[in-house]
Length: 323
Ligand code: FES
Image (cartoon, rainbow, N blue to C red; front, top):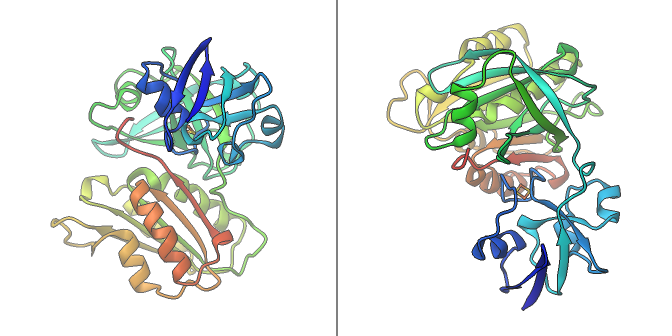
């Protein structure tokens, strides 16, 4: 059993327990959001000559890795480990202003943010929003850089502190602290003939919307298939816009899916199952998966078994329960 030392306190970290879980078990809370090694919110820095396991540094920039930074939620130490909070410049934050806020429907809003300093991103990457009280949550970017704003789609989650705040308290002109961009779920324009398959659930549509518009704006030649799904029709949004896009672009195909009973007018079933039944052979495809973690993780494996190369499968999975 490894010992971990943080804030001058030392704890026994059980085998197969992450640093984040160990601290939480002892009543010490670090900032966290995804708890899956994606959002980087739980970043900390190893000290006193100790070294984090290499896989706890997955996704961090090389200069952060060299300085001993690691992600507490995916760090399961085999040796003793000391660490401290990150320096202010590890994940620098900037201010962004809420430029517009509209409702797609009663559950989902569209926020457009204008960063107050230079912010380079690719559509489909994500940012973290930091509230003053330390609450942090991740949201994917649906807009293109040339549009001059960051567009986020925010679902209101029952008991979700951040989503409730963004829906009900943050107004136009409000200031938000953000960091990022993060993630590798974006369009790569080096294979314009490659077919793309995009599968998303709920507001997992946001990054896919950005990726599709990026690909079309760069004159992507291969087929682009979007399967967007939800259990109920109130979480299907941008339906008219996506149907129109499919009319305007002969290589873009859109399928909306409902897995619940009220599915008249939609494809019945889960988006990932409908997609793989309609396109069973993914040899040569580039696959993007966004939305519910269970869907993303199970579909990753199925896409690989259906012929997609692991290098061509991109995913960002965010848990919804704590938003
Ligand atoms: S909480 Fe650790 S990376 Fe998201």
